[in-house]
Image 1: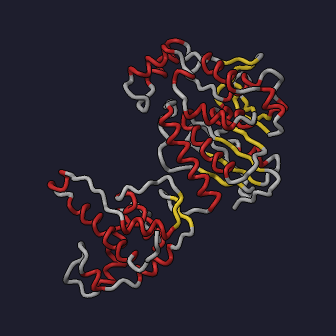
Image 2: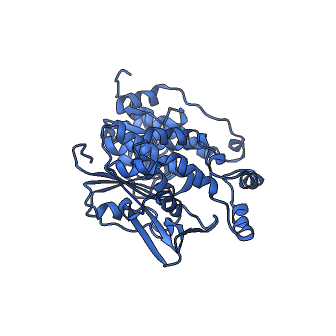
Amino acid sequence: MFDVAKKKLGFAFEGGGARGSYHMGVVKAFIEEGYEIHGVVGTSIGAINAAMIASGEFDKAMEIWESISLEHLFDSEFIDVLKVDKEITGKISTAVKKWFTDGGIDHSRIREFLATYIDEEKVRKSGIDFGLVTFSLSERKAYEIFLDDIPEGKLIDYILASAKLPIFTPLQIEDNRFIDGAFANSCPINMLIEKDYDEIIAVRIKSFGIFKPFDKKANVVVIETPESLGHFLDFTADNAKRNIQIGYCDGLRAIRKLNGSEFYLDNCQINMLVNNLFNIDEEDLAQMPYFKKDVLDLKRCLFEVVIPDLGDYLGLDKKFTYNEFVMAMLEYVASLKQIDRFEVYDFFEFCNLVRNLPTIRVASLLVRVGIEIYEKKSTLVERLLNKILEPIDVEI
């Protein structure tokens, strides 16, 4: 998928506030795997991350994210208002209220933060392409601009313009009033395509705004996670560290072509397990819960009734494949056994862990009120998986 020897590798970062910590985890994976970054573009928090990376200060940027707090970015008055909402992952009605009543949230603390941690001279001398997106309300047009188009001494202004949500006080650069670039292009992949990059990594973080379609013929790989990355205002070190960890593993998944949706599996041999499923004995099926004892053809019942039902239980699409079904079972049971997600596993090592570690179940009163059918399905998934894992005997 990727070629370290390619001449031009670029990253496009989507906006999304505190979720931007995910960007850093993805980039960390590429750096550790030996890739050289030639260009970074972004919108909003993506522009901020892109500028720090373009300045050659990736390690410093990681330190900032791993110790981030609301105090870095907002004044005490706004932080107190957020606390009234009890939890930062809740609604931002207070922020919207301040927008209407006070003319917006003061962004001076964010400006100070950017001026402290982004060195314009380093960005300009790095040799790395840097670009951002913002939107001019005055001209009613998008600005998708690279560093050469940003006047000397105005880099911080334009980065702040890219990240200027409507809840903040107005931002003026010369005669133009700007708002967040997500209103124009939340993930500026096209900026790198137009510069003929060989490899483009688009890192998405569930942003609001407009996601522009891009030329599918371009060599673009989109990296994103189905998991929640937290509220866009959850600027806490714990949330950032978790998102960095997820981004790092997702980056490795893309680079090494790892399998799995929740876990990260190398040397995947899922076909072997599917073959074991096809060859399962009817005598073994007869010993499992959920099979009707008066069914004459248990194998037919397995493939026509039980597997479709379990696929639905595991959250798969109706047209799932047997490979997807077996992988879903494997990851489901691994979760029951609380196997560490954030590690790259050899496939056979992972299978042995799933087979040998004890299952950790949480007792539930729901079983007493008619939910036992779900417990039976959970048990059946585990019993069925254990049976198709039996032929695998590799030392951990």
